[in-house]
Image (cartoon, rainbow, N blue to C red):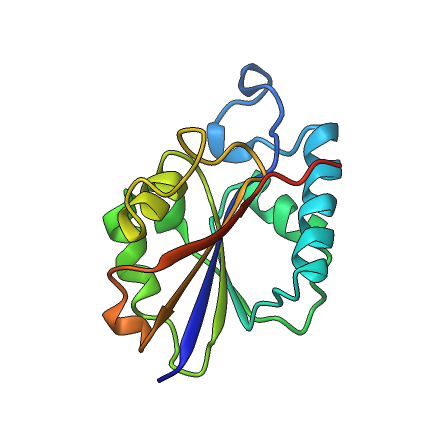
Amino acid sequence: MTVRTLILLRHAKAANPDDYETDIERPLAPRGHRDAAAAGEWLRASALEPDAVLCSTAVRTRETLAGLGLGNEVPVVYEHRIYVGPAADTLDLLRQTDATVETLLLIGHNPTISDLSDELAPRALQHGGLATSGIAVHRFEGPWRDLNQAALVDQQKPRG
């Protein structure tokens, strides 16, 4: 049976919401750019290289992805439902992941990202959820379509 890895990443620190007409337009703050780079370094140091990425359509999640420095060879799907949806909808998206993907990176927002981690591994997250640029690494055996529970094997808050 294939072991799958799901990396949940909350976007890095965003700019002040008062400076933008809509929430989806908010870019990263300077600290967010540093933290996104640190998250990328942590992923590489941990040998967590995604085969595919699911990313919210918000500017701050796109900039977080760019800051990770994954390179252009990793396929990315930008999905608006990650921006608006609850954890159950995001879990449905994960279940549609191609069977060839062993490691998937999901970049999104709270409360959805923390709620999803908690749904997969109840009460395993520390500190009440993921902070900005926080990472939760889950593993499970079987196909993506059967994803219901996945052990939380690591939780990090990389700082740049």
